[in-house]
Length: 267
Image (cartoon, rainbow, N blue to C red; front, side, top):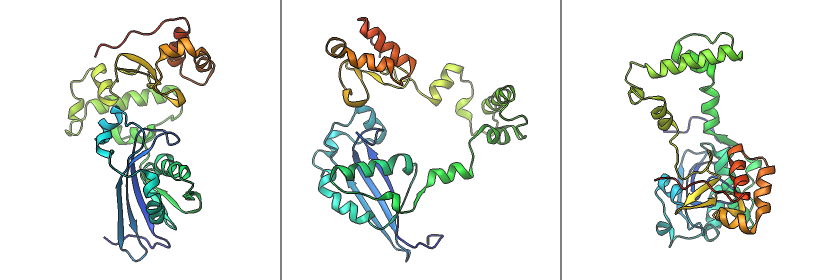
């Protein structure tokens, strides 16, 4: 299929698999890209990379790539010139690329003394097009599920009632598209849309159980046992308590300062 609009520069559409969700500290494990040239021809780049840091099991569960898979693969530094040449002078596209893939790639290039210069080319995030053209706000949900206008939008009671109406419609769809929701209770429904991870000690997994040991799961202290920090670095826990963290994270840190740790999960 010929690209539907004229291109002034080649357009690289790419995707990454990484060791985690934080561009500044996580590493690329796989990069794949398709370059569409102005004449309609296409080029492809695909590389598995050794990230030089361990791949967490929870990440492997998502993309299926573990440490053994990439043990003999080149590092990003070893193929940086090849990847840079593929992207050089091109506009860039991806899905959620503005918030994730581009920052990850920029960080990898900066580690090897390169500048991707994504800010000076055109970037087209396909997810942004999707969200702009197919809104996912409450007004759109009322129109889609309830087949009516959302009268009184942004009034708290009107929004609450509309949300209830949408939920009822979602749970009573008769077209067969939502069959997996039928007969579920609230707990089963909650687990279906956002499964609870029993190894997370707080809602967002800032503290996480590893082999029965509660560890920090963010920042420079990631992987450090909380018990060790209780004894040797209490100021880190005090920093959490005073910082911009969720209340359940602060509560775990405060209990740790008092010598109390939560019980390990039953898994």
